[in-house]
Amino acid sequence: MPELPEVETVKRTLNELVIGKTVGHVEIRWPKIIRRPQDAGEFARLMAGETLHHVGRRGKFLLFCFDSKVLVSHLRMEGRYRLDRENVPVDPYTHVIFHFTDDTSLRYRDVRKFGTMHLFRKGEEWRMLPLKELGPEPFSNSFSAESLALSCRKTTRAVKPMLLDQRAVVGLGNIYTDEALFRARIHPLTPAADLTMPQIKTLHEAIVETLGEAVKMGGSTIRTFVNSRGHAGFFQQKLQVYGRKGMPCPRCGTAIEKIKVGGRGTHFCPACQIRVTGS
Ligand code: ZN
Image 1 (tube, rainbow, N blue to C red):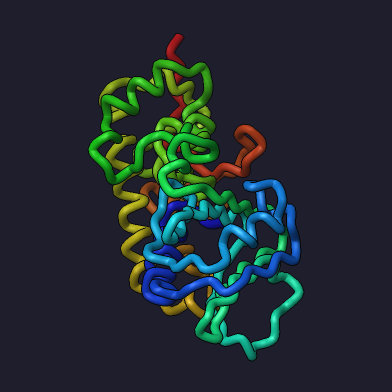
Image 2: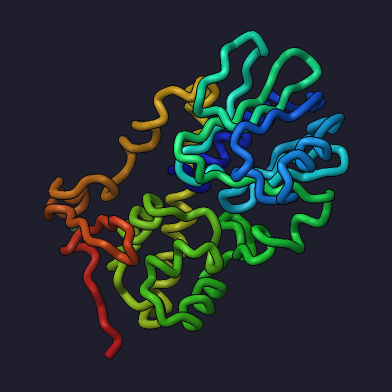
């Protein structure tokens, strides 16, 4: 499931592969992926003739910036892009195909079909959903211990669901939230409002470091992504708690536990990540 580091890697790869290409036509095999405009045929008409200038990222969204349009794409669980020559057969999990004018096509493949695409006139994307309600980027100055403290005080939720909802900070999913909380020694069920300022400072640093290190690793395995191979095992060897139920904590040796938090499988060390209750 792609989180910020994986999406950043996909973004960098796409910038190496598809910049300057012009869309001849778009083939939509599963119209429900297209969320805006609602009519997939209209989406295809609007894209024809547009040249791609840059691929950006906001949170876990990819932003394909064309001449006059911006395509906002979320990969959700399983979405991937690959660039192929037109003579390469299309597999049944490919749902949207951007046919370029140079005999190549960018293919969006999504086994679970949960991904989304929204098309906007350039500039309009920031004022509308899904981008307009997103919180700060983790590597920007607008994400700080102070901004995180404000988010913590405004909520009655536990810290893990608060970090997942993309308003305190963007880019964290289930895996890197568990990793950041482990690094900060904070129990995932701690009410966010009960965190002390030193804990919030530690958590802020842990989020920036966890995501930053993963982005670096993604950057070094960029070719793996191009071929869409080896997706599993990607950063997994570096993970300290996620997916390690019953295995020894890398810090203290205690067995890692797995619980459900807000319906999400959550891994933590019961010795290092003590649950503190405020009252
Ligand atoms: Zn531990």
